[in-house]
Image 1 (spheres, one colour):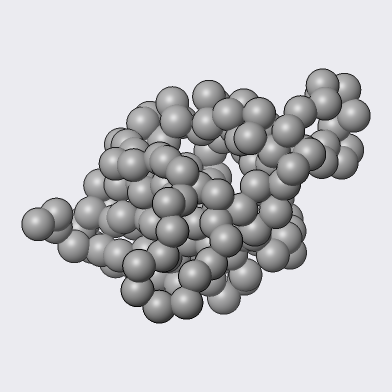
Image 2 (image 1 turned 30 degrees about the horizontal axis):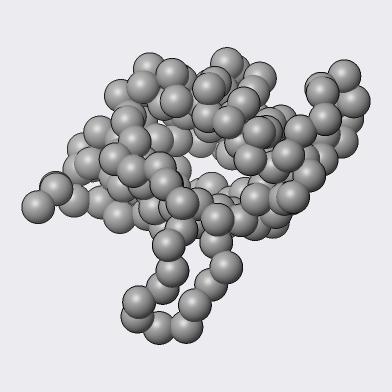
Length: 151
């Protein structure tokens, strides 16, 4: 990422917009400000749509939310790996054992060598080219970040 912070943040906001399943401008800025070379884990909670919504991509064949998510995964996993990332877990939500329950479909745990590597995924043109599958698939997406070394 050789561009200035302001340029990168502007481009992220322009591409991803104000979708509630994406970081806000403040969250993008926070991600940009994360410092250091400590590994970063992203714990993702995903609720899929029953039927994918390919708004603006009507040439995409009809699909369930899960099918669209698999299309997204087929393209996003290699891009994450190109940034030094990998996935520790991608599986079906099996319930909540502490605290109030939430109706997620999938839990995905990604691991990146640094916050900068994670952020580089979102500015990658090849990742952005397949991102419409994620938009189509997902009803609700939340991500929680943690830095530090694995236990």
